[in-house]
Amino acid sequence: MNERLDLASTSSFSSRLSSRGPDTPESMVFARRLNVVVTGGSSGIGKAIVEEFAREGHRVLFTYLRNLDGVAALKSKYVHVTAVRLDQGDEKSVSEFVAETKVWLEDAEVPHVDVIINNAALGSATVDSYCGEGATEFEKDTALMRVNSLGPLWVSRGLIPLRKQEERTVVVFVGSVGGGSAAVFPEYHAADLMSKAAVAYLSKHLAADNVHSNVDIFCISPGATETEMFQKSTLSQLDDPDSFIAGMPKGVLISPTHVAENIFYLSTSPASKMFHGAVIDASMGLAVRPGLQTESRRC
Image 1 (cartoon, one colour):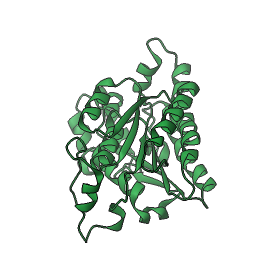
Image 2 (image 1 turned 60 degrees about the vertical axis):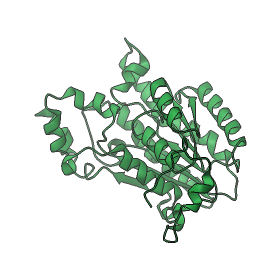
Image 3 (image 1 turned 90 degrees about the vertical axis):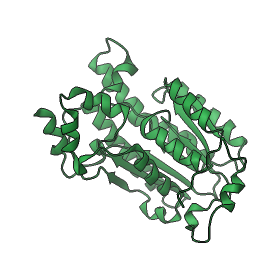
Image 4 (image 1 turned 180 degrees about the horizontal axis):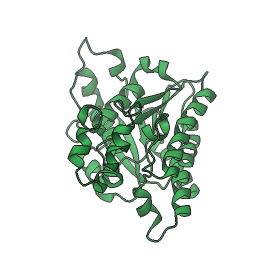
């Protein structure tokens, strides 16, 4: 049940199917490789998602912006992953990405997009490198809204039509506890959390549009996760990050791998259809006790 497929050393997807035992849940048996698109897949949660699907034998197209080292590491490990550069805050870049995805699907067993995971986003710290030195607060606010809220809208608008009507497509938005819940985190850029709130709304809006289709849509909102983005925005600002982490819910940061495993379930299990339209709090309790993070940063 926990076995994984490393595509660099296994010749065919059929060997994956034949290895399944009689007790394997139906949701974990696939008649073919799924075609999975992950934005922001070169690091953090996105990288964990790419690896989760790639180890299971599926075709994965992921996007990156600048992290060529992350791209090289994934491509050297998994032969059925494809990397495409995308700046999802730029209309031309999104259009080119959709066109490349369409070409990529033409080489699939079934030219249908099975899973779309909108993960790419800027944070309160990473927006600085995106905008460049000397950027004004206005420019940073604009970038956060374009990349984090309009970007997923544009990507989804371009990719969802690449599906076959009779096949299931799952769209997952990776949001944030800040914006995806009623919790307020004043230590971050207002536009950062405003943009994440927009992602949660977008997932509901598209779910309403697709309530009678074979498209299932969810938003999962993780809390404090052990990623480079959280390191830059939060941990690097603290004198005692270990004490900060100890005071967080359950005394740990969320693992990107655990987020990826849950997204894999949502994307592949027929039982997940019941969550269509849901914004899922995956904060390990931070949404109901946001002061554990906010107040500890002020101590």
